[in-house]
Image 1 (cartoon, rainbow, N blue to C red):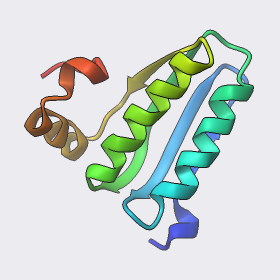
Image 2: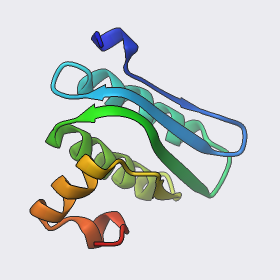
Image 3: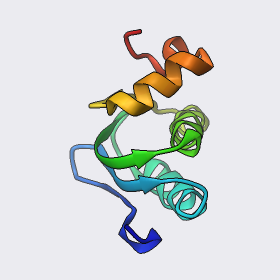
Amino acid sequence: MSQSQADVTMNAQGVMHIKGVLDYSTGPLLREQGRALIRASAVPTVELNCAGVDKSSSVGLALLLAFMRDGQQYGKTVQLSELPEDMRKIAQVCGLTEILGIEP
């Protein structure tokens, strides 16, 4: 998958969908797009749905943490859903399950 195929979008219900390969080549653009979507969202709780993630390095977890910080900055809660198993395993190794609000 090329970097143009990684994408983050948000629907009217405040569900943000992140898709594609999350790595050093896609991270910076996804970071900016996600921040703008969270800032513009009218809902108090943004659900970050990760079902469309094909592959992720640690950059993917850094993105999730950054989106959670953006939520705090803009007075919103960001909750994760459908986190792929490889991202879950990286979170466990890095000790991030509690911060990310996922079951170990």
